[in-house]
Length: 243
Image (cartoon, rainbow, N blue to C red; front, top):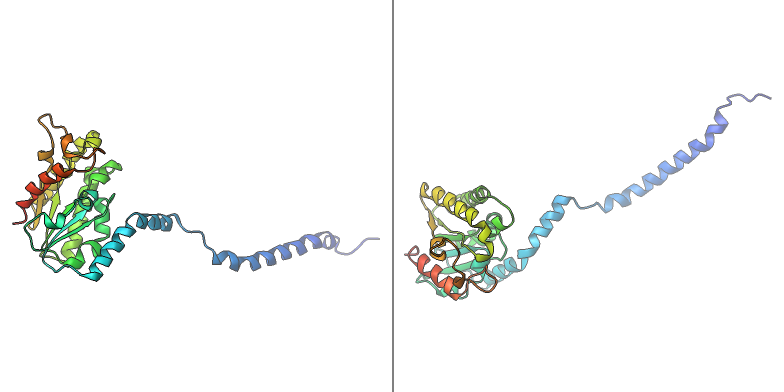
């Protein structure tokens, strides 16, 4: 016997299975939506916050206890600032503020302007950065751009504040980067020379020997960070710019 609509019965189980799978997928959708996978950008941003959070929290706690009065001299930058013991007592200035966070780059100084610079309303900012940038593969031009952004960020809120770049030091550990260090220092020195309110402090030339190589006696055993003799050189050179 021939049945009418011969194609209906064989396809019915397939259609039923399709409907069931569609319903199951629809029911599972809300649970999936509640647990989104973090984007690579969000993960990178969170990771970037981590290294300096303790330092930033310490600065905030110190400010909450007693905010330095405005009009002082602010030192900001990487570990060469952070490790400078008793920096606040090294110069004949009524207010010295130290805000160094180890491992930071020039771009990080710009990123954290709201926390590191603006609250203190300094008359002078001395920034040391770029050392780590070069070690991580950034170019001298990258550092100059980051410094330009730093200047623009400070000037937007504190137009009367002077900004001075402390030249990148010639560490023995980073002797292979001496060419790029010299180029970066030259680019920044040329940049500030044509702009009022900006300055450049050359400590580099006092830290190399007659052969143009780093003076190892100015550095700790790690051949990267300054010892007391190295900071004595810095103090002598910088003091003339704070008068």
